[in-house]
Length: 64
Image 1 (cartoon, one colour):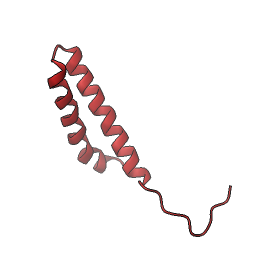
Image 2: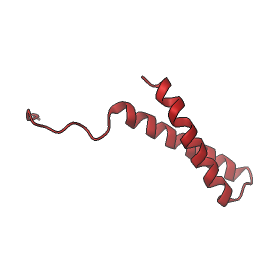
Image 3: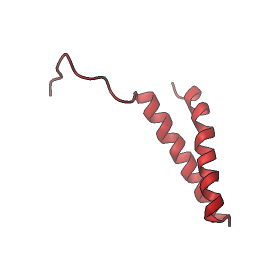
Image 4: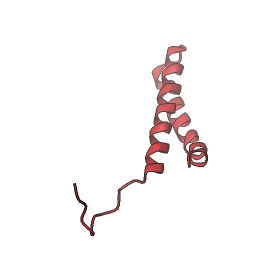
C-alpha cells in the first residue's frame, strides 16, 4: 500500500481519538452504573453525559 504525496491529513489525530473514545467509555460506565443503582433513565443519561464532558479535559492532559 503506497501513499500519494498529496494525501489528506487525518480528520482526527490519534490523541484526539483516544481521548474521545476513553471519555465516551467513562460516560457509558457512569450512566450505566447510575441506572443500575436505581436512578431513572431520564437522570442516568445526563449523569453519563456529565461524566463524559468532565473526563475530556482530564484525559486531554493525562494522555500524551
